[in-house]
Amino acid sequence: MMLHVPDVLTPAQVAELRALIDAASWEDGNATSGPQSALAKRNRQLPEGSEAARRAGAVVREAVSGNPLFMSAALPHTVYPPLFNRYGAGDGFRAHVDNAMRFQRDQGVRIRTDLSATLFLSDPADYDGGELTVEDTFGVHEAKLPAGDLILYPASSLHRVEPVTRGERIASFFWIQSLVRDDARRALLFDMDLAIQCLARTAGQDGAEIVGLTGAYHNLLRMWAEL
Ligand code: NI
Image (tube, rainbow, N blue to C red):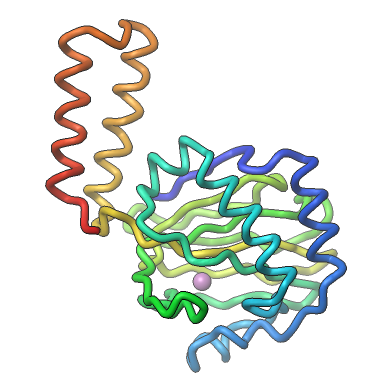
């Protein structure tokens, strides 16, 4: 499942984040790459663990944790500390699949990357190219979203960042280990949650049907969740 989550950050929050990260020093984006993606990738990123990345990452984590659509779709177990990258003219990232595991050095823990997220931090009018292109079983999907919007997609999918031909594309990206590792099960729970919320708005919270469906949702989550 690929999901567009709008308005994760307000325009004021985007401006605040941009001021913080634009003033920081950036390094070659291949600092976090495996050997195969190092050949495919051309961009810059904020050094992992740097003060700017930590502060900006905390803002992103807080924003996604308070976003009901993100939480319902991702069912996060662990959110990897957000990273930040920038693609200038001539930069891009050829087709690849993200590493299955990420080691979180400061915590000494490994996370399984079930989902990838990109939070756009540039106005799409400020650059040409730079679309995130994701291939799944339903075809090829392109995302180039307003600043403050996020795209969530399975980390198992083949994806790329189209070459930027003008301006600069700045984004935050991170991985999520989900409570429910299987994409189809997670998508089913998400659909069910949306339908229950819709029904609750139209039919009220306390009907026997809502209670029954909510119970079924939680019992499926209990059956499938891995802690
Ligand atoms: Ni990737």
